[in-house]
Length: 457
Image: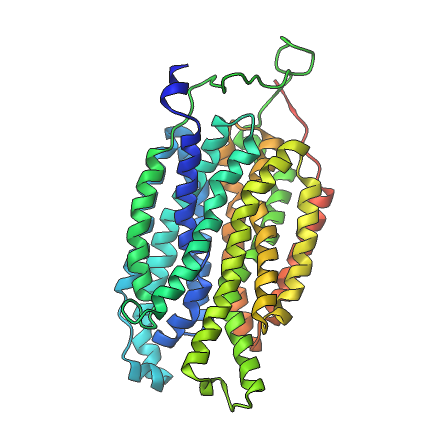
């Protein structure tokens, strides 16, 4: 009882909220950096997108060892050390020196030579170092908070991951404002990495201090777990899956494939939606004003187009955050996730197909992005909840950590493929169609998937 009074169970939820917010700042507004980095360094979409692909891969792969270590030693130190590494990596991007503007304007071999070191630094600082730290921050609160809320597990999971959407909601307009400010960025994205990196370090220290595992046998006052089969007082009929048992089930790997398909589409859109909007709206402006090329767009009009395109990732961020909390009570009430999953994934297929034609209209693009964010964000509550439902809470850190590697692999493949296919074809049509196909495969898996057999106690 003393643990209950000295450490209120809402505190780990706050830790999860703050930790996931730093991860949202890290990951989910990257599309607003693409055009400024291209302009300042002369990089291609593929060059810049590869940095985001790398961070998704490293971030996703690190959640597995972070979850394993958190299960053994507790979440606080894992989040604290990882968060500091993340903040340092993000901050270091601001120290990269761009080539001379004349070299950027000239292009050619001289620009490639001048950009070789800066590009590798972007990949190292943002992709590897910040991604490594972010992966350590993300998973432990997701595994910890539901242990304090056994009566509301899906809701607790949703609350701990809502910060991913909240962070991107904050980051997208903030980054655009800082980039456009004559006294801060003056067109450069580098100062954003400096100031936001410092803020990340502060947030993650507070987040780590909020995390603690409840004592063995703890339960909320006035709550009793559902009676096992056989009536009250009967011995427990079933036990949780161990990590070793979980990874041997076909259901786990089918969930992994479904997670990959949904993440591939969502991360591609997050990484590229603002750039897609800028390209499409700029082309529409050129056509409607009978200009020769995009280079002829007046500076004030170009700034307005960038601001209008930034609404898409911002709207995506709002729904991405909101659904993580709202979907939890629905899943808790229904006691399952299959119908919700399939419905949302069907909507995601339609949204991905609508995204390309939506690009030239800021309002339409924002609406489609909002729907994509809603469907994508739901996965981060429903997949952990499904993992708990299928395999039990005992090894949730390890089980969901391994499952979340699907997100990392999908991030690398989806974002890199999106940038590569865009550079190869000159538009975002093919990348978005490929994503819709993968979501369709994920939908089929989720519609036919059955829970594994229970393990006898």
